[in-house]
Image (cartoon, rainbow, N blue to C red; front, top):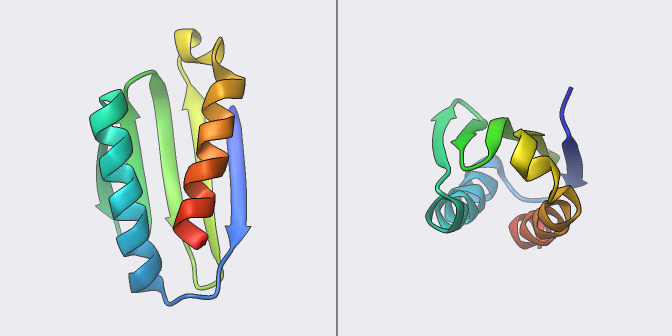
Length: 92
């Protein structure tokens, strides 16, 4: 079960949303040492305090699910706040 799970609606086409996710994932990768790769419409995230993570893009939603490592769990509220900002950046 994910430690952080967020879903937001959007009204863009999937390629546009994926381009925004790519930009945000790149920023997060640089800042936190996370690696990411695409598997269809799912961006898989690994490393940097994450046990597992994914950003799923559908025709109407963007969902982020993160399973945090032990050290990252201590900063869950800070991470959750940043995730809220990033998902707003994607759909905004």
